[in-house]
Amino acid sequence: MAHIAFIGLGNMGGPMAANLVKAGHKVTAFDLVAASRDQAKADGAAIAETSVAAVKGADVVVTMLPAGKHVLSVWSEVVPVMAKGTLIIDCSTIDVESAKQAHALAARAGILSVDAPVSGGTGGAKGATLTFMCGGEDKAFAAARPVLENMGKKIVHCGGAGAGQAAKICNNMILGISMIAVGEAFALAEKLGLSHQALFDVSSTSSGQCWALTSYCPVPGPVPASPANNGYKPGFASNLMVKDLTLAQDAANAAGAATPLGKHAQEIYKAFDAAGHGGVDFSGIIQHVRSLAK
Ligand code: NAD
View 1 (cartoon, rainbow, N blue to C red):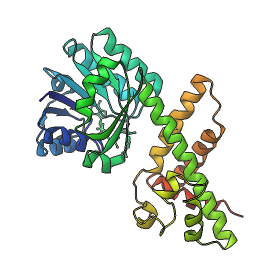
View 2: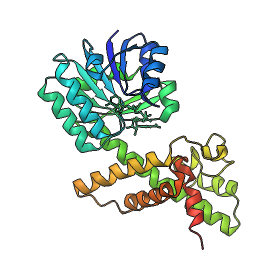
View 3: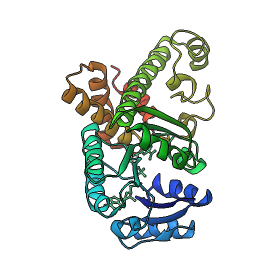
View 4: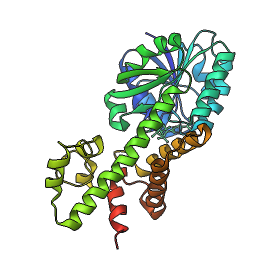
């Protein structure tokens, strides 16, 4: 069993660290927020006073933080005190450029590094059923896999430094766009007098089939477990979709890719967010679509 330092014990990081404890690892944890540290202690982790103190003597360091600037700040503090040949994994969703800079920081210090953003949300974090999309050298990925297996059920090596983040934002751009498309189709069906169930029965088995429709249907009824049946309680909040679509736009601009629908989707979710619905599940975007009708 490994000695693992875990930094960032929020909605995702807290339960992920708890799963590492459950798997039998020695976990030393740190977060800026006292309540999160207390919860990690109750879950069986040892608590450190600072990030630097948490990583001392650790074989593996995991970070789960809000954005690229937090990751770069924490990595620049902890990488210099890590032993050569040990491993650092970032599971946050951050911009590809910051992820590459973080890898470079680790490489200069002789530390193995992996970017490993997740999909599966807080339910996946609690249930250890996350999907990890990983970027980094083969040797680093091989070292990270057994650790990630304690927190998730699907671990994919997507390529070199930053490839995990690239996969994450490309996937979520598809999701953000397709949820608007499905919402528009239901909103049109309503105007045409077509029932939700009839559209679902046809499209879920026809060429309109997609995950946003069949697993996360934005109207109540056809998919009982979708947030539409629960007042659009997240799930995956709209403000997190804005974050991911903004990361996709930043990456597209930096790389010179044309993503017209990704850009439009970002604007639509931003407007929903600005109207005070950032905490609503992103499938609630159908309400915004309906509100645009003449
Ligand atoms: P969160 O805000 O609940 O947790 C982030 C934690 O990082 C907070 O507890 C905060 O105090 C801590 N933190 C910030 N700066 C720190 C520092 N310098 N040192 C130590 N701790 C620090 O966020 P979350 O929902 O847990 O998400 C974490 C990451 O996972 C984000 O990048 C998010 O985009 C991504 N993500 C979230 C979800 C989700 O459903 N919540 C799903 C997939 C991916």
